[in-house]
Image (tube, rainbow, N blue to C red; front, side):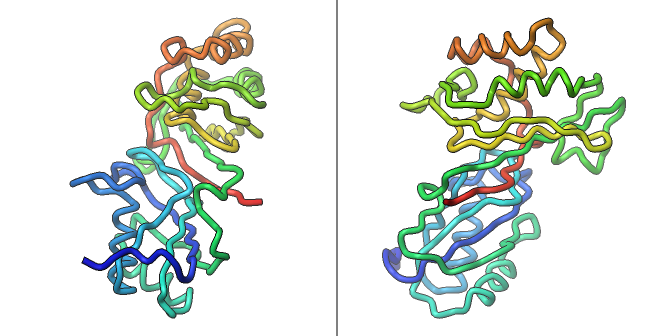
Length: 252
């Protein structure tokens, strides 16, 4: 078996995918993952195995429009040809939208300074079959003004252990949230959050908590108490993965 290349050209990918049929980004034995599909496609066209590094390890069913990854290769293939060749070897639910050559020290995960996620809720009395794969349907009315007040309590540097998936506890659950807000376009309520790092399951747990406390009096104060408590059991049930999309990764 050929060995991985440890030096050479550093190739950066921007990736979009529908996560419906995948067990997340990261390779898992005997399960379809986005990383495995891209690894296999690249290996086929350049002739040696690669390990594609992703900026965000999205979970099962989570989508992306702006995932970033990189790999190292000695190939002399131009980047536009690399892009077309990879896409030709992928199914239509994964697309490489951009390919560029970057400096050797660039690392898709560790060089990232911010990641941005959006969670989309279809908020109307009846569902839509054409949006069932990428939205969470909620028939009861969501008061945008009340929800936005709750969102503002999330901004800042805090311990977000209350929103961390059990069994995946990180040694340092402190994150710096730069943006957390809700917007509405027609029947779609879109929650946008941007931070320097995210705990596993954090965004879906936040959405579930907002929906849990939304109709309570002093809901914003309730969210502050939940954050301060740092206990996953007091927060809401995680919202479904299908509404979540990794939209951007930023580098300084």
